[in-house]
View 1 (cartoon, rainbow, N blue to C red):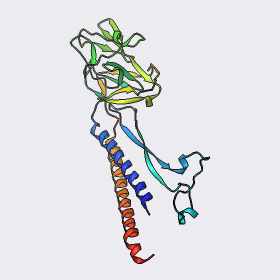
View 2 (cartoon, one colour):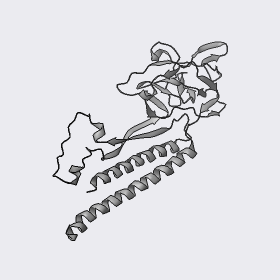
View 3 (cartoon, one colour):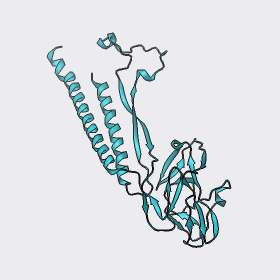
View 4 (cartoon, rainbow, N blue to C red):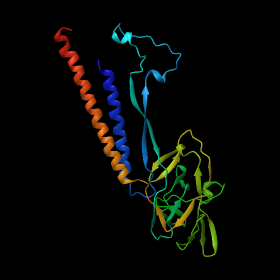
Length: 269
């Protein structure tokens, strides 16, 4: 019977479907400020090769041709999705002229305080809220650098007439109001997307951060998405063709099973 083959083909179709969903999301966010694209990752899961070598495998099927040529499950494999990972590469800087827009160049993330705790973002479209604090466009306070509790590290501005240096120092007139906290997360895989270009730490993960000394801040700019539309469209076509090939394989295995069940018994074999 070809049931093993049909499941292998089906797993391939599911994998390509997941890949197309990821690519479609990248394309939809190609104009989203500071969006970081995702990529789907897969590997081939081979049944026997995933088991320890000391495990004894005894055939549990009636004697058949397969019993004489037992491959210990090595011929039965399928595609397994190992998840997605985020590409944190640099996006293109776009000039806005807004004094509260700040773009990051190089590795680093802004620290912001959300109701769920400290989160991270590269979206530097900032504004001043009704309390005079520098906040993100969603109203989350932007934090100053330092080791003090996050609630005490908010930045307070009188108006938008500020100067932001390349290192993140904010000046209003001759007064230094503080330094925007830009940190580098040593293990980027510990971050998960929260939507709207925010990142949080995954459950059961501990991350170590350090000041992103090499990062440069550009006032009057924002960072664009790092999605390459041409590359994403090319990948979408490739995934679509692979999906169609897997569908054809599924139909072929289904036809073989039908013949084995209906035609072969009638032939008297």
